[in-house]
Length: 123
Image (cartoon, rainbow, N blue to C red; front, side, top):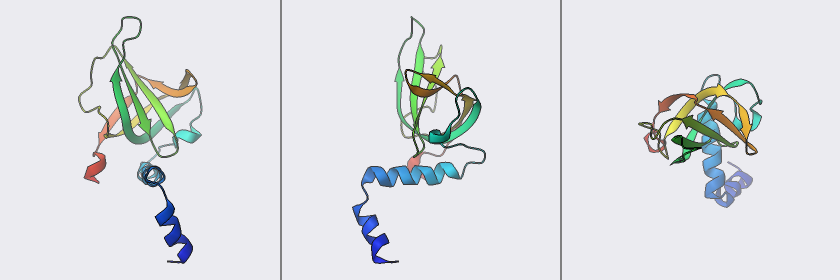
């Protein structure tokens, strides 16, 4: 290992390290597209880690909203008509599939199909 790569490892922030780690883990998932490359109005598969999960009613309808991070960017996930979803919690790795749209300037999938994966600490 050269001195440049050793220096780079020392000077990398925790956030940079986590982003790199997520890109590597998400990149192992077959058929998954990085969030930064997601095409709008197309179906896509994405893998990452849930950063936040909240219950946020929309016009009187219970809604679970989550933020999925894959190291390249953030994707919002919205499940309409749900108060909670077992296993959908911060720190959980997830694979999702659905139609990519833009809501409030952010890439979003409504009612995505999902697959629970091992938690971040279980790798």
